[in-house]
Image (cartoon, rainbow, N blue to C red; front, side, top):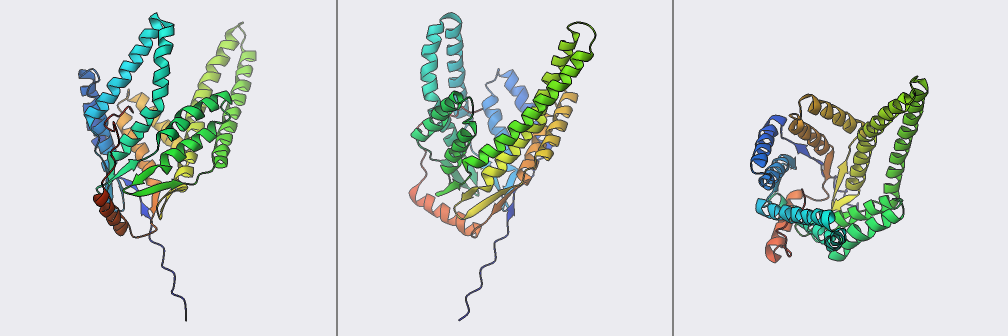
Length: 348
């Protein structure tokens, strides 16, 4: 008896961004004006409008994402952040010891606050009418947001890539769509390889800049003029080198690594970002923002979002319609976990 032929793989679903710079410019300029007029109070509503525009214009498998965040909740979170920052700065100015007393409980509460932000953002995000959620525990938040940052600094940042890997595992590994959990398999070694190359690029920039600066210093005739010229060349070279080379490299490689090793139940993802393309977009966006005195910023945001989204694909393992229907049935039967204080968002 002949075996049944294997089922052909399901076609991939490409992500796409359908927004335009002109549309977003109108939202952006109104958000900016109302935020200024209201002395920043409207910034919470501006954030919701911005996220809704980008979510609703991001599509995959003939369906858009959506954002349902409550501006009042975001405003509450920002008020908390401003009050804490003001209290710390006030204490630091007049009573340094009191500033330490304020800083300790804030630092202890920070992992809880960051965990709440992750829960808030995912709970108020949806696709095909079904919400996402984040269910990471508090112990994991303290490991990722307190233990590993301390260890990273004590190791003179040699543990930085490991901390980044732990953070992504906590973030992706505790995210859900309906009742199906995301998983991630990115290894520590893969993070270290990416950061090693980035460090090599940065080192090459520093050496090249130092050689060029010394040549300018030796060529300068007036005493002291050469050192000033060297500093003027070296500092911008390093800054722009990081922005145009190291930054795009890290962004592209980390996003590709994370999403290419992330799965949602039987479904996979693929990311194909290219560092050179990101560098070109970043450099030309920066130039146009400067030339237009900032008015190109919404067009730059749309341009970057369109490229990043277009480089993403969903690799279905089963029929998506059946998968979503099963998730909705399960969530409808058992409900969604809101969690305590989910209506506070501290993120910007």
